Length: 421
Image 1 (cartoon, rainbow, N blue to C red):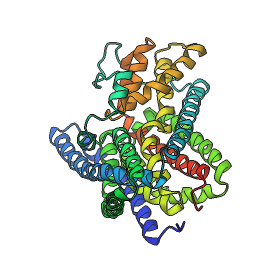
Image 2: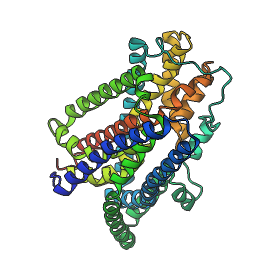
Image 3: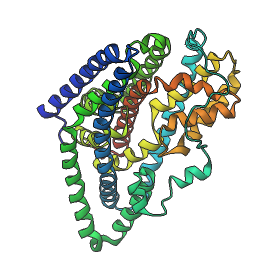
Image 4: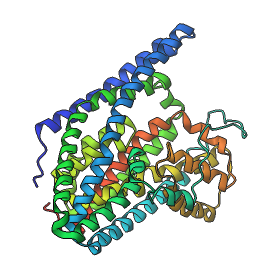
C-alpha cells in the first residue's frame, strides 16, 4: 500500500475547509440580520432557513449511515476470514481493548486535572438554571443490561437497520471465524464480500463529494441560531475545553510517535480530511468511511483496521471521555459544590465503565453526564448550561475521537507487524 495522498484528496480537504469558513460567515450574517431583530417574520424566516440547512446536513449523515453497516460487515468478515484463526482475532481484540481503556482513563484524568487547575465554573457570569429545571434528555441510565443489549444482537437485520456497530461487529466476527474454519467451501462468500467492501468504498467516494455542503450547512445553522457572540458568554469554558482537547491530541500523538516514529506526521496528513469532516458535522460517524480509506492509503493493515475501528467507535471516544469529567466538574463548580478528590476519582472510574453502556443512544455524552450528576447528588439542571453550546463542543470532541481511533489503529497495526508503513 502506498502512503501518498492524491491531489483529489487535497482538493476535497480544501473544499471542506472553505465550507467551514463560509458557514461561519453566512451563519453570523443571518444571526445579525434576522435573529437580532424582534420581528416575528424575521424569526420565522430564520427558522425556515435553519430548517433547510438542517435538512442538507441530515441528507449527508443519512448517506453515511447508509454506508456504514455493509461496509463494517464486509470488511470485518473478510478481514477475520483472512486472519485464519480465532487466536489472531482474539489477540488483536485484547490489544485494542487494552489501548482503549488506557486511552479512556488518560482522557478522563486529563479532563479532571484541567478543571481542577483552571476552574472554569468558579467565575461563571451566566445565570444558573433552577435546580428543578428539566433538561429534556431521554431518561436512559447506563446499566449492565443496556450494555449487553447493545453488544449482543438478536437479529443482524435489526442491528444493521439501527446501525448498531457493536452488534454488527459481534455477528461479523462469528461469521468471519466460521468462514475461516470452513476453508475453501466459504471462499466464494468471502470473495463476494470482498467485492462488496470495494464497492462500498467507491460509494463512499461519491458520498464524500457532498461533504462540503454538509459542513457548510451544519456550521451555518449553529452560528445562525447561537451567533458568534455565544463564544463571548462561554468563552472561558469553551477555550479551556479546546485547550484540553489540544493537550489530549498532543498526548495521543506523542504516544503514537513512540510506536511509529516520524510516521505520525504522515498519519496526521492522511487523516486531516476525516478530522475536518468530523469537526464540521460534529459527528465522528460521518468520518468513518473516509477514515477507513485514508488509513488504508497510509499503510495500515486493512484487516486490523476493519476490526479496531468499529470497536473504537464504541470504546475509544477520547474527546468525549475528556468532556465527561470536564462537564461534570464544571457544573459542580458553577453551583459552588466542592467535590473531594477521592469522590472525583470514584466518579472517573464510574465514567470509565458507564460510558460504554449507552452505545447507540442519541447525545450519549450528555446522557452519561446526566446519570453521573444524579449518582453524585449534583443538580442535573446544570446540563442546561451546556445544551446551548453542546454542538460547538461536540465539533472538537468528534475530531479528537477520530484522531484517537486513527492512532489506535496505527499502533495496533504496528504491534501486529502486518503493516507496510
